[in-house]
Image (cartoon, rainbow over all chains, first blue to last red; front, top):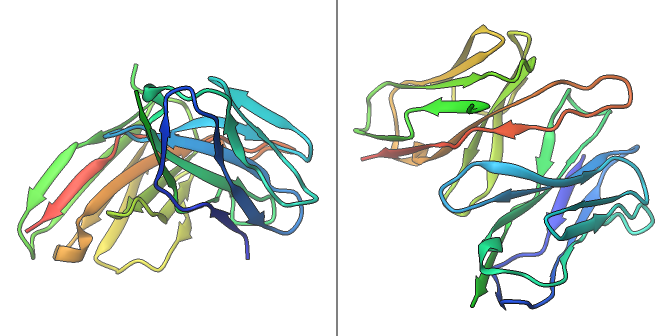
Length: 114
Length: 116
């Protein structure tokens, strides 16, 4: 079945450090891939998405490229800020699955220190 | 304007009680969802409704019953609350897949349920 695996946290970085959070997926066909972010005490927000192979999603300095050959969608940011501290979720949605269903990874807690 | 709203934000109650959580979306979406997030932040889908019709019904105790009076509302009623029901419950909505498209899900702020 469809699934997402993302690196376990927590991840702790200093401000301005480079961030990578790994995400790989298992799916039949051509899924769409997403990164959602959850700030403390809030609901999830879409951070970025990519709907086909080689697409790059980007937002707020974060980027992720849909790599079909490695079934990956790693999240990167060149210089993190304290305000980026949050939980990050990788997710996929597949045409072949139940209408609209999102498969989430387990989330990666990121803490950025000044 | 709040896109997806939930009430209450916090809910503290005793074991055995019955409680409801309400969700409303003003985005004009036709699909709504309920998720449960445990203390380790793991998100598990519980239910999904499309145009008031139940689409996803995961392995959830039948003490949990969703109700969708119209497309803009999806409420969650929980009977005989147990300690293990303590979690954060999120409502979400999306405009469902059209040819070649996938609806982004928009989440509410969550309801933090604590069962004592």
